[in-house]
Image (cartoon, protein in one colour):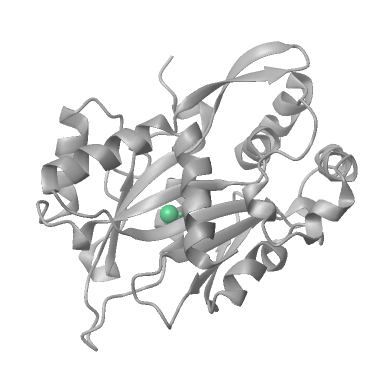
Length: 271
Ligand code: OOG
Ligand code: NI
């Protein structure tokens, strides 16, 4: 699959489960009469050798992407890498994180192993694994809750499976919003709820990156036990600053990312 098709398939899959992202993008396009560019796309996975960062990164490497930064999230027990495409400055950066399964309880470890063992194993070798969604059977609410006690991220992965968990608007390229603050006000005026964990804007000009996001949408999910609400995906907004060398900063800030992850946290959802 060529990269244009791959990215449009990723967007379709994401927008279908994230109506807010679709609405925000349409609002911005109408407001600006312009194109919305993506700063980056983020993906989550388990660190099992069948599904780890390296496995997920494969199709992006074939498109010409290279590995750039790495990030540690000790409290959440996550590890991440980001990739850039040096051949195409309009190509979104890719941020891939993985759950450090071995740092959790035996129970969580065996739940994750059982989830992956139950899948058709050949799917893990497919270049478009990330487009496959949840490749395991109807989830159990009991297992979902047990995962959630230890890790929101693990519970989210269990119900959402393989997909992009957010696209990110490149605010530098929006013509009608000079800064992230003005964009956030516009989003709130239009009824969207911001993730305020760590402040509405995460990061500072001194860190060369400011980020904000709206809370994940909620979707009805069929569990073995019946229908329950869970979070799907969210939309992020990033504004980058020039470094001393005159170039825009292209990396990520672990402290900010730590709070951005919480956009899918069920505990942040309004009841
Ligand atoms: C990734 C959160 C981190 C960023 O831009 O710092 C991130 C996630 O929610 O999976 O995307
Ligand atoms: Ni992000």
